[in-house]
Length: 95
Image (cartoon, rainbow, N blue to C red; front, top):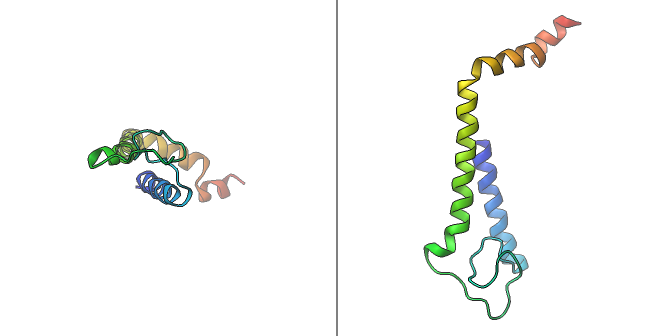
């Protein structure tokens, strides 16, 4: 959930930056790609205007899902490493 939330936060930042700085970070213009919007640039319409944002969010979700599946499969190994190295009560007992 944290990874997906950070992806959404990033897209919101892109949206506001595009509005404030006059850039095309979200790729909503036909004639520019990530640069400042010029006078003759043509905006995309409909779904075309959302493609960059939707792909970013989709790939963010897929990456977060892959990490979650890995953590689920390797749960026992991850817990063992945590208990051995990071758990506060274990660290106190080692002293």
